[in-house]
Length: 144
Image 1 (cartoon, rainbow, N blue to C red):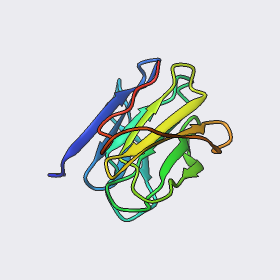
Image 2: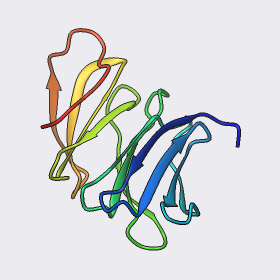
Image 3: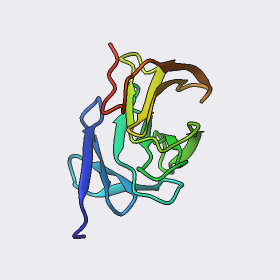
């Protein structure tokens, strides 16, 4: 479509791929046929910049744009029709960084405009921890 592709992730079983583009859509594709299976438009006013597939292959997280107050979103994509499970709005800024724990129970979000990262439950959508300690901006997050 002439837009920018920000990110792509393969589902754990290899059957699907999700892409994230400058049009604000996360698109779930069949890896075998190349057909679009689901088109997910994240709430908010900017184009999301990060996507992560949870280990169960039934959910994915989309990081919001660099626009202030756009939430990260956890989607259910296990059925034919996708739906929003959780809107994760961090206080004070946009969520441009995210990572999933290896077991899929936690989601960490952050942004380059604020020196705090946030730990969320992927099951409940509840904010569990705020980790303050960065000096300056966050440019990446990782879990082990």
